[in-house]
Amino acid sequence: MLIKQQESIKSSEITSESIYRQRRTFMKAAIGASTVMASSNLLALTDYGLDEDQLKYPGPNWLQKKLQDSFIDPKYQAKDKLTPFKDVTTYNNFYEFGTSKDQPAENAQDFQTDPWIVEVTGAVGKPGKYHLEDFVKPHRLQERIYRLRCVEGWSMVIPWVGIPLAEIIKQFEPTSKAKYVEFTTLHDPEQMPGQNAAFGTLDWPYVEGLRMDEAMNPLAFLATGLYGQALPPQNGAPLRLVVPWKYGFKNIKSIVKIRFTETMPINTWYKTNPREYGFYANVNPDVDHPRWSQATERRLPGKLLFPNRIKTLPFNGYAEEVAHLYKGMDLTKWY
Amino acid sequence: MVLSTKVKNRLMWWSIFLVSLGPFAWLFAQALLDNLGADPAKTLVIELGVWAINFLWITLAITPLRKFLNWKWLIKYRRMMGLYSFFYTMLHLLAFATFIVGWDLQILVIEITERPYAIVGFIALVLLLPLAVTSTKSMQKRLKKHWLTLHKLVYPIAGLALLHVVWQIRSDYGDALAYAVILAWLLGYRLYKKGKTIKKLAAPAK
Image (cartoon, rainbow over all chains, first blue to last red):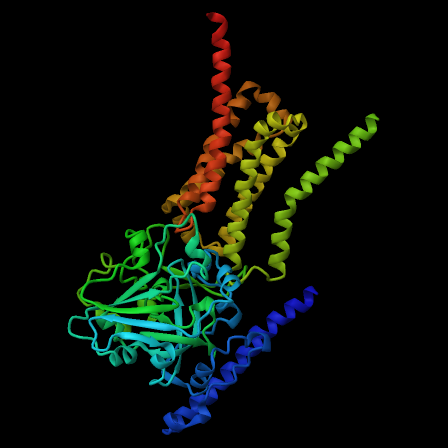
């Protein structure tokens, strides 16, 4: 029995990924060779070489269709080795479903994510409550491989599927008063046991925010899936922010509200401990967390005898794309 | 009859010894099976630390439990529980240095000297050393009354261990609170007893 278990882990982690990689290489070549990419369904992402028991997040019908029609965005493909699907979906910080890493995968499986309403409010031309389906409909989903660096000092590499945040924002026509975007997670203690936790310091619902120019940066992304599937609930289904140059906690999950404001949003971790967590939370090896160093990170999955410790890069390696946003700012002050 | 009590005692000793070794055996097996999740290093370090503290609290609980339950024999296991706390504490540091830091001495020194939570943890570990060394019966005899004074170090050690936990709280303080409440009770019990003894001693003078 023990041997069997070990085998199943290995085959899913190694085989699936090599197939995944091969396919990507093939598809990238296809993209390079062809300019009809946008109209070609041949590039649909369907086969990820995952084991059958891992293909358990098909998502609602409308999303399945969108996923089938998604394309690989060649500009945003981190070269790093992918973190296996199993680790991406069983090692999560999603305190709404429990504070330990394995609890979200345990507690979120029955989380209802369809139908899903997103409320758009504030300084915006087209406010309203949108069905996620309508929200996503005008856009073709794309796949991007991003590094994810957690403020706790570990990191992963994840193939997301989703839409550039700027495309979404444009469709709501923000006004000149929109200086910041604020995101809010669902508040539903019945479904999210962590929101009932007796001994926690976080205020619910979870809130995060971006400055408008950060939100409009091409790297900012709204994910509706990963590894070619619908976003698993423990990863923030059905809609989550992905801002890879910032620490993981900025990547707010299960978004129900997007508000455009003139003032800087008070994000949850900042509110609970402003000395340790800022609004910007850009990955920065030179500014330590008061309680631990941010100079290095451990790339997961870890192996006991090979700690896999690597140097953390400014802006998580995305300095070229985003460093200009912070020109002239003292990043030790605006951490 | 005498023999059977002896056998019973032996059996008891071995049972407690093996059960206390259980967390280590379980973690070791999970590590070998690669069953500790995406971040096995952290899981291992945290679990070993939790058991170090659990055994420290158990050690401190022996005296009051012995009185409450009237289980006189419990006292025989106080040394073993203390040594298990020492054992898990050492493994906790060893696992941290090996699996998280990879024996990168520069990082190790920075971690242990610059992070307040690590500093107090390390001091607690260092203070445990003389207690472990002097835990034998012969040392107890040699040190005489100083032995008791020396082993009162267990109280500041417990305080430092609790601080080590508290200073790592990010949002969830449930576990830390539970440890704090239990420790408060364990220490409060001793203060209460001490107060009573002093009163008793003072009484005849009236």
